[in-house]
Image 1 (tube, rainbow, N blue to C red):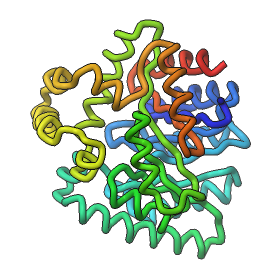
Image 2: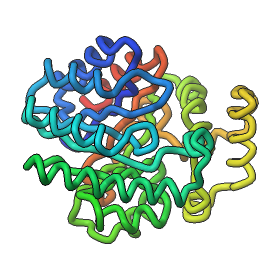
Image 3: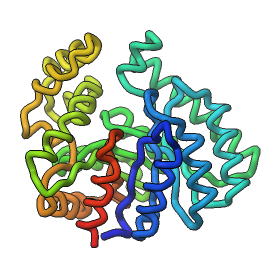
Length: 298
C-alpha cells in the first residue's frame, strides 16, 4: 500500500517541524511528499528547500500552489533552481486558488482560470528554455478544469475524498495515461468521534471552497456552501462548522478510527489513480495524525 501513498504537509511557520514530519514519513517508506500553499501558513519555498537538503531520492512537489499569490516567473525560476540544485524528482502542482483568494483579489473564477492557463504556458516556456524536465500537475475538481487538465498539463491532482465523487472526476479526465493523484485531508484516531470533530475543521473549508461546477457535478448544496462562506467571512467559524452533518464531514475528508480509515484508503486505491495523497492537519494534531497514518499503513 505504501508505494501508492503520499503525504501532504501544510508548511508550518517553524519550517524545522515541517522538515521533521517529512523525514518521519520518508523513513517509513512514504516517498511522495507534497507541500500545500495556504496563504496563512508558512513558506512552501523554505519547506521544500529544507526537505531537499536532508532527504534524497524523494518525489516532492506542491499540492497545490496558484498564480494569484505567486507570479508564473517566480514559480518557474524557483522550480528550475530546485531541479538544477538537487536533481530530484520534483513536480509543480498548480491551481487557480480558492474562493477566498478570488474575493481578496476581486476576480471571478473565469478570470482565475484564464490566469492559470496563461501562467502554465509561461512556466512551460521557461522550463523548456532552461532544459529541465519538471512535470506540471493541475489541481482540479470542477468539470471544465478536469477536462482541460491533461490537455495542458502532465497530470492532475484531484481534491476529493469520496469514492463516488472521485469516480465522476476520473471519468472526465481526457488522457488517463497521464498522472492522476487524488488528495484528501485525513484524520485518523482510535476514537471515531474525535476524528470527525477534528475533520470538521477542514471539511468546512473544503465545502465552502466548492465551485458552482463542483456543486453541480457532485450534488452538493449551493445554499449551504454560500452560508458557510458568509459565516467564514464574518469570522463565525464555530457556527459554520455546526452547519455540516457528520455524513458531510465523512464525504469531504478521510476520517474515522483505524479500521474505517484503512478500509476507505483501500477503496480509493482501487480506483484509477496513481497515488493517494493524505493531507495532514495544519494544527498541533499534525504529528499525531501522521503517527496514526504510519500505524495503519504497516
